[in-house]
Image (cartoon, rainbow over all chains, first blue to last red; front, top):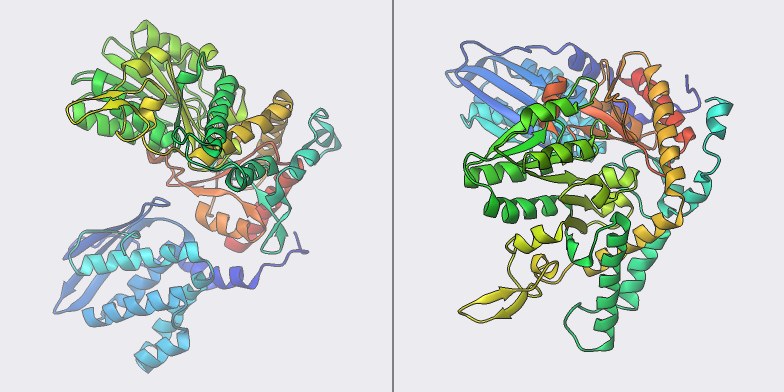
Length: 166
Length: 415
């Protein structure tokens, strides 16, 4: 229906197949029982919440899972985040956090981030770059970055964070 | 939509009303603006915009101070706005009308002055499960300060609230009943007169959060039987930064000042200061002068239209929206009480409210998504968020159709 009004390109970019897939069928959507760290992220503006648990040993994220209530963007972001982080070093986790922030705010594009991370991360970066659609929707940037803020809080042992943090 | 629906409420010329609101002719993302978020903040008629412009370009000076012409005209316009509010809500006297920066400040004022003076440990404040955060948090702050308790009257799944539940909760320890006149999430119109009678029978006072109530129906504070009534200007087609606290004169007289400063004193020495009588006692500092004048203009505007016909028009929109929305697959309406104002929340299977609102926005349709500053209610309803469409005097049946079309399109994008 409504053939007269085709979907705008930025909507198509925002809600591309991979986002909808991860939003509906999130990966690692469970808390890790034997976690070494745990943190909750809240978006007080909309009530979205995500809890991230991780098992970290030898500076490596050995297992990671999340539980959350939120929109397709925030759940997809959490899902892709846990997929990307499993088995990675804490240093890489921090670098990916920065990369996602840049992608979501339009500071860097996928090509720039790919160059930064090299061939080993091509698939990971490509997947995370699907979140960059939010850069055209300023109020939705927080949806995409909420799980990542919770992740950093988790890895740094801070317990709780909100999107309202500077 | 049906021809019948289109010809309903012929007494109300919505096309004419729409020409009074300049913003309604703009487009959003290349689509005609369909503004369905008036419960968050209403658009402004040209008359309000003009009154604000006139005040700043012609009549502006501080009020209650200067012995010169402009200060006199500014003061007269500010106080004329107070009289417009008084008449609009049928308050007994001008001294019962206190200007605040909004309904939130008005509730905080009552909590900080009346509450701290008259409530003590063991006393109870009765709220409902549907309250806005602004009618919860000020009472929690009071509770933490004086040790009183909060009692919550439950809401039924359809959004209605039974007077009988109030009868169970209100008791000898109840000192205050603080409830919404109309729920901002569910649209439910609370039976406030009956609740007021129960409160008074128990020796308690009742404060009504009228933010949504005064928008959709004529409010007579004396007939409602309440002790305090608060509302915001910006939801009533007026400017932001202005709200009203109405309270019975004897209550305002007994209440200590809210803030200290200029304009609220009788005389000041370093040893002792005496207060001006209400309303000045509660209006420390330079007040929102032009905002009050703008609110007065909004009231003039509402007085110039047939408000009963406007209310009937809003009700027609609501009923049409409820019927149309219910036909969308996976749709669940939230708030279907029999007595309700033109506010409709809903959830749609597989589509989170924020995603819906984003997609709808690209069709020019503005709706509110989220917890609506009523997180306790969301928890009771078992949802983390809802989408809410709210209807005002300027909305049309075609806009309801636009909402439904946009929602169906959103399903194509999101499902």
